[in-house]
Figure 1 (cartoon, helix red, strand yellow):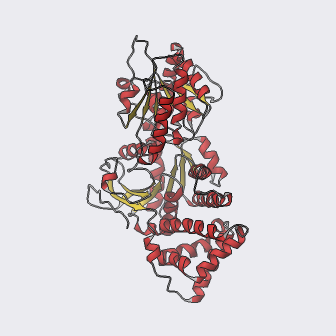
Figure 2 (spheres, one colour):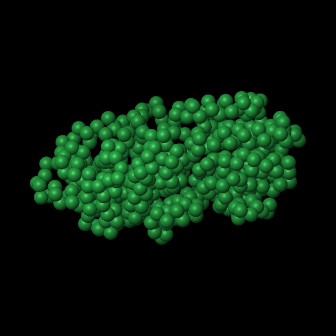
Figure 3 (cartoon, one colour):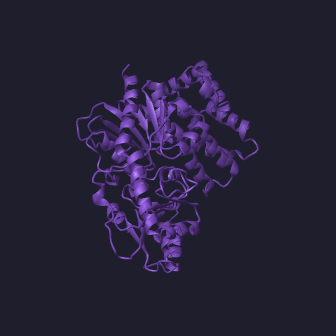
Length: 504
């Protein structure tokens, strides 16, 4: 069953913008969700929003972690893995000649994916069929001889040297979640513009709906979705055979390229992301760089007060998750403690239910290194309170886009040591591979290298003049490049352009 939560605070009406969000807001705390909340609140006077949350599993109102702003006029939540509508649907009632044409089109498209980009008639036929028959079209593929023949023809073309059974079940997994996503386009709220905060299934739903309804579409990509999935597959236990991993990776690459080709506008956070998007087929003229921003109102009141005390504290703001590489941070603390025995090291962030085992491993590492007196796990906390205690803010992540915690730290004048991931180099340094005391807000270290990270952290702690220079540089970089007002103005221009297209 779909979980539809009526969280509307106003009388339900057509919204200006429908946001389609996968796997985060408002159910999961973290950088993207915090950004989303801030984003909605920033446009409370300009636009109304409807929100569609795509989840893994049913959610209820009790699972919501954020108070929806007043300009959200409609909220819907869908479990991406609820395939009951497809499995329970009857097959298409359609004349044989038309059915053969549809399946021929489907087979040719799958055997030559370029047809998705170059043959408008092919795409139009598939979209019209989906629009007319919905779940029955997908049930037909799942339940009929024609559908089975289509699957086996695809198998014979690309996977005939591998076992059919493993291929078949993985194909069905891909098939069901794709079908579920496409079917949901009929259930979207009415809006003038459809905006996804990622590619993936949220982006697919956005682009499919745009193609069917001719409403304009926008994708904001924080991290590169296809790369995040590739990282997961490479480290997955359930996909042991390389050809099955490649099957999923090829699927996400194709889906990403299709979205880049069909979306009206792409927003990305930094130039590194833009270059990757172009490599996957996005047109450069479609891409606009709009970084994350921070609100620096009353920022002076939130900065760490001057003190003559010779105590030292460092901090990491992140959820407890392997991708944040908390274990490397713990090893860094062990090394920094050699220079500063009374060091306090905060780990500021929530523990998600699915990461309990990883949290336990982190606790065991703390005990094995005798760091119980040095490391404090704060859990979900008031981050600003801890910012006022921190001398150096660390980021040890294996993957990131543009971490909000670093922007907040820079705005508060906290020197940074961050791994060389995502936009961190661009955020902290004018020339990321060449440190400059005159312009840079911190130091970039190698990912998964506790020695390098610790040495850079000690360098800052041992050099107050350097720390003050970095503090001033960070504040200056925020003021010049990452103010929330600048970000909002850029988004307003994008929205105005696309909404004008919607109203033509």
